[in-house]
Image (cartoon, rainbow, N blue to C red; front, side, top):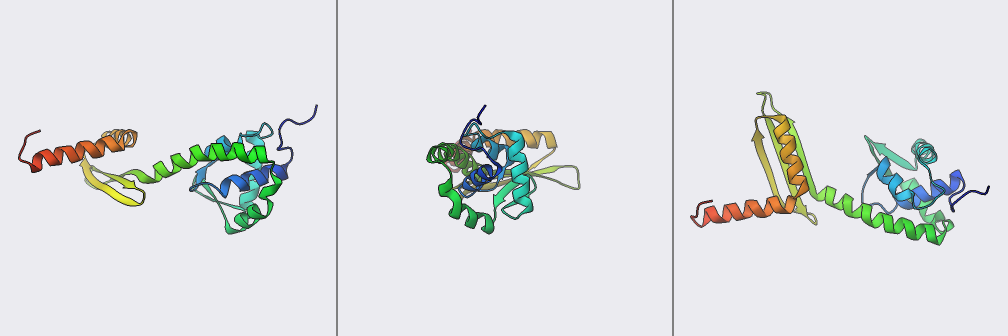
Length: 179
């Protein structure tokens, strides 16, 4: 039975990975890469794992913690070889990349972290950007780490709502009103 899809060899798969990685808005996890790469029936988890690991070893990709990014060497190779990918595969990738890049940009704009303090309390850091301009940064002392994590999760779920609620509360207080 003939192979399914346009991606039929390790080289095809590596070209696909370079094409994707050259167009991501930032470093991606393996699962994010997989989701975009599944634009062709010839891609599978195990082959992609092998290809990505080999590309890290050969300097095409770089791994920091759980995120991958393309190197200068990978970018040069991508530009030289991207026309080798079938047009339909590139179009499907571009559709998947639009969704991924939106998520990566949002992830970059909405940040939270928790620092454990020596006295047993925790400091919750919340940060919201709008296209590179900070809208607000908040440091909040929280007595319980689980509570801090829940607060961070609530912030990430609706950062605009938190921002608007905070502005509304401060505006009411500034005008001498009560909340």
